[in-house]
Image 1: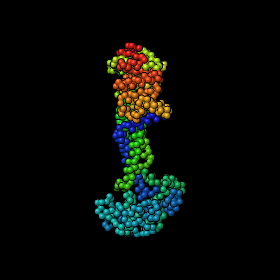
Image 2: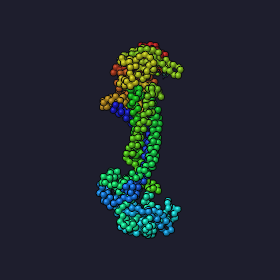
Image 3: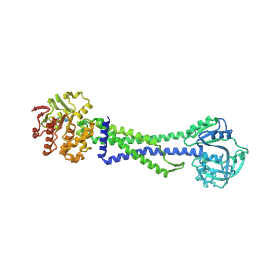
Image 4: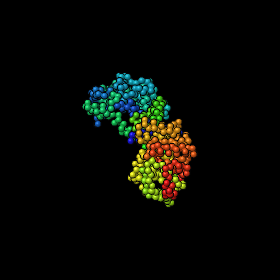
Length: 401
Length: 223
Ligand SMILES: Nc1ncnc2c1ncn2[C@@H]1O[C@H](COP(=O)(O)OP(=O)(O)OP(=O)(O)O)[C@@H](O)[C@H]1O
Ligand SMILES: [Mg+2]
């Protein structure tokens, strides 16, 4: 059996060495292209999904969000909760958010928005909004009378450039008036404008916890939400279980829980796109290899007849073509991997610019492996069928051809 | 060694039936150099193909070493051809993608014999057949006579019990033909090699121990 395979392999090597160089080159090229096609478009789609996820984590939800108990409006006993959370293994930091409805006013423009109170030092460890200052600076701990606002809230002087209602071109240093729903009205200096390309942050107005306490007129020991950053490398769901174990009664949701509803449909759509791309690529690969091997075997009918006549088993002859396909597929796949990696590194340097952010293709080694495997299986089938057909021909008929 | 009984072969081409062999009874002993002669279309090639297990008879039996060919499966026939039979064809039938040495060493390799041993044998036979300087040439790079010698070398290296040759000299000039026939005679005598050769050249007669004349699918004369 093994020696038969050796003979098949020997025949395959010789056939590739002494066969038509051009057709071998083209076959490898097509396999490389098919492989690239299988990987590349899905990698961009996956890249876009990952991008969206990352921006949600970085600018909106962090790793885990604690929400009020089912029927409560707020999370109460905030300081106890924060103390508890910060002790949970795997939690890097917990940062509370408290929001109040308000009406913003800049010159004659008015815009309804909620104002979110944050604790800047905690917040910096939990979200990356502070890294995305378009203008000005992030809030400092304990300061009052200043806000930072999202890019969309600030808007442009020419409001036709805005995606949505805005204050019409607020710049750092401008003063805006905020009328809170509790009747308090304050004027703030805009300390910074953030641009994260994530709607959540870009539509927000942030002030400090201390400032909000002065608006309310008493210490705030409650919150709308607490954002929790988990240590890198840990599974958010594991940390969530740890949090529950510490006796936290509030609702604990990982970012995956939060986006699964909103993004689930989209992700499903994307996986259909990816699936179709892979299937179409595989069909192309099958057809091309089928034709290549069919032409090869039909051209080799006489040789196949000779081999059978002198006593070489059909399986040796068929496996010879199988090996040829496998060798071509291996070389084609290697070329494909090189091509894909080159494209991906190129796109890491020059990413695609989309309004949602820069998109970088995303491929895992596992994907490369499974797709190569698919390609192998289908090419083996594509090689086997025509080889089997010609190798099953009558010896004398084949030799006469 | 070979025994046939009422061997017939009928080719069907649409509605037309061609009776290529109409009942052949013959016995061939070990070590014989048998010539099969006869006019074109008399069934020489057909008979050789049947005896060489390359085709199945329409009726009748073939016994090779008392093994009935009908009792062998396709795979067993293939192995039988590999291990016990050798062939030389009119058009040489070398494997075009293999060079001279590889063509000659193919069968021992398929039989999984010890490489060191068959390498030496192959080289020896190439020297003997004056082909050693062509060992790395492809079949289409050498002359017809050289190709036919390669074909004989390929068959001989495998030490077949019976060597079948279908007009091995048809495409060769007299010099090359003589060389090929001399080679065959030599192995027939030196190694007691059984050879069955189709030919329609009268001057080949002197090489054969025995000649079977065919006409219209029947044995006309056996001498
Ligand atoms: N594959 C085939 N299909 C149909 N008829 C065939 C086939 N092979 C041979 N024949 C017919 O069988 C008869 C015998 O053919 P065969 O080839 O055995 O003759 P031959 O003696 O070898 O002739 P030649 O000297 O021309 O080679 C001929 O009439 C031929 O036409
Ligand atoms: Mg003939």
